[in-house]
Length: 243
Image (tube, rainbow, N blue to C red; front, side):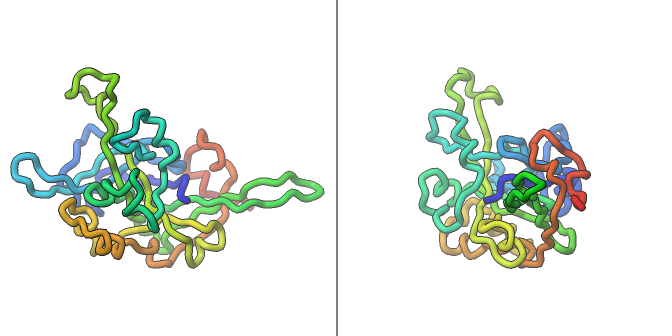
């Protein structure tokens, strides 16, 4: 799975990297070295203009943890932070979003944990590893997003009436990441951004063919501070070598 990641690039930099044409400057997120489920996260998505119908590429914050449109309660999203690539096109919670509400979730890298058994002098613990592209490039994680209407808010035009949430698509881990955890996020190559974000592109087999290993498998895996284990901790010091 992918349950924690880092995303520290400024929105202006992300807009340039992903060719964003629509962004509300008032929407901001602080850099985070410890993005956790239910946090607001940057997402790149394609939406048709209301007047022209032309698909425009936007950058906006979404809540991590997908809430299906038919869900009765929003806390469903806390359990839906990942969607398995093997079944994403057919699971009721994800299939509609996979068909026409796909997004990119920019990351510096993601975390996975490896259990360390107890010894005579130390307790068992989980050692975190940070997994990121070797060249430091942005990781465009493949995601889905969905809209959920909060029926407790009477006014349909009230921004509080609508939740926009997202999930990360994962697959079996390979290469360096597979040494730490059996699952990993999937990514979209720059050449495939347009096809992935286009809501009119709905062929499931063609869409699944766009899903690839992050950084084409050229990933750096390194142990980092156990401080990242606590979601309350944040800052560049989380990436320090624990030794």
